[in-house]
Image (tube, rainbow, N blue to C red; front, side, top):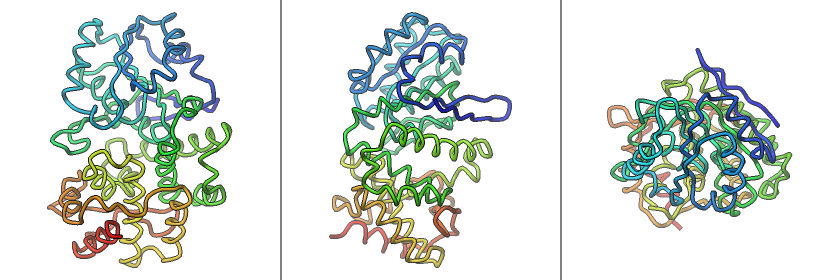
Length: 360
């Protein structure tokens, strides 16, 4: 098992990563929280695959109730949160209880939002079951729901007490879900770790069949990068913005696609767009842009999406939380392994990039 510590000011928590560590989840959770009453919020598909043995071990230590939610962004709503609040009430979950999120990024965001707001906040434990959630969304405390079709419009910061990432839970992911998660891994290489990027380049498409040891190393490497950034900027005021590389355009694609793109697929398109913007303003050299695109190609991630138009994407970009004075801010790379928030970019340049990503 690999342990990565997130040492926030005044409190800290561990991210435990390893193959098969879910079998000892009860002991790990009991060591991290004082609560003995749990509401388990689970992705229905992940729970079907991996929930029963986990639940058996948890019930020996905790008083548990389980609520499953359908997979997908359509579950990340205020209506879903209201259903979970009712479950908290029915399970008599008090301030001394805890919410456990078992699933991918959608469940982590939704369950985290409920934990942050139920009785003004109860403990949260993250058990991420997708590669994307293990390398990224389960760490850092961002929790939210979608409102009016806008991703993560209503949310807050609520750090977990523990993140337990069993890489055995990744064995039932579809190839498409693995690719989606690997897009976020590429992001970490592009913004912060040239050596990670080069390692990904050497592996190429072989990453889709990574060994358990390789998966643990990849997850731990990304979590270490994110931990270092979050510790320096917990509330997303400056440096943490770098984690949004590819996400300004990516979230626009994800919203406009209405379920036809996975999050990582949309982020891959966003990274392609960001690299073109960086090249266009003279930040990123053409060879580095091509290296990023070639790596994304080798992982089978999309290079175009024909189902939306540039005008719709522009409108979605203006809903991004980084917009200031109706001007979007983009995180761009100056080189592989180094990123910054760019100065305002001309709308015409952004429009050309969006047109390139949406045309055949």
